[in-house]
Amino acid sequence: MNNKTLKKYMSFSGVISTLLPLLSIALLMNLTGFFESNYDEYRDKFSIELVAVNDIDDSDIVTITYRVTNNSWRDWQWINYQVLHKNNDKIVYSSNSIIPDWKIDAGEQTLLTVEVEKLPNITAFDLTVQDLRNSIRFSL
Amino acid sequence: MTSQSIRKCSHCVAEIPKVATVCSHCRRDQNESWYKKVGGARIPLILSVLIFVAFNYGLFEKNYSNYNEDFDIKQENIISLNDIDKRVVFKINNNSNVMWKKLAYQVITKHDGKVVDVESRKSNYWAIQPHSSSYITVETYAKHPNTTWEFVITGLSSGK
Image (cartoon, rainbow over all chains, first blue to last red; front, side):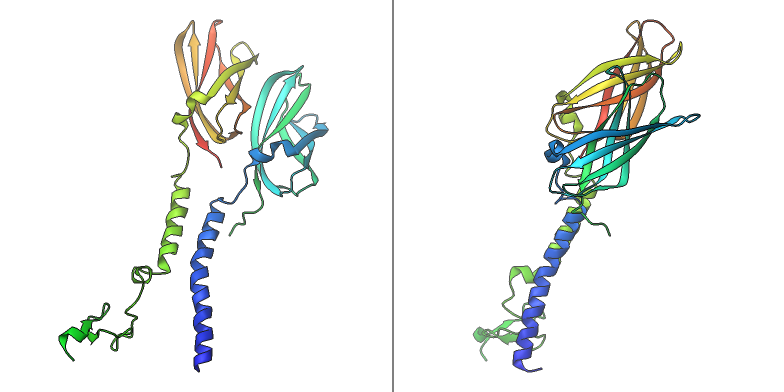
């Protein structure tokens, strides 16, 4: 190995040895969600519209479909939501759930179908997004 | 070579000329920075592992007991399922600037103001954003006409 090649190798290995620890810190911070945005800062960028209520006879479950619009510039996934069951504006039941596989891209609309318990005299189902995770984080 | 012109290698303790920058025995650099001496690239790796462990064990999590005054709870509705079984809806307001999740709570049942039952429960899917409200429905019972329920938050995990 001549001097020129040795210098080149040394500088390359120097860069790698400096970058590797920094990259590993960044990776671990990424895995712990350090770079994630808070959904709270983007709450007003979302709108939810009821599309359909599918009340199946002889079933204890009602399937409700909502159209969710994401007006933010971020992609989101993993939804935590709350459905409020109302009877003439009075809340008679609330349920919380998570859909880990649900995704919505930036500036897009997507459907969200949830299943809730069938209760008598319900006049409205209001869905609230309680939390979302943005898609920066990747999993191993 | 006089004793004034020699010194000991900082790594293998062999005697080397005072002006030597590399040890003639172990070939180690005599002008290494403190950073390299204590392990160099291992420091960021150890730090990153410590950060990861700290995150996983909730070291940076907020403690709900420091924020419980930022919460107010109101009974929203009571639904009678039959003569005994009831469904009570509580509204929880989070006036803090922290997002909370994984609600642990107690439902205290009272007859004529006297505590007759305390039930501890947990709702892992429940979450509340900063400066917002959320609801929780509890299934309970009333064997007496003057039954009241008190809702007490016993624990919450802080979200990001």
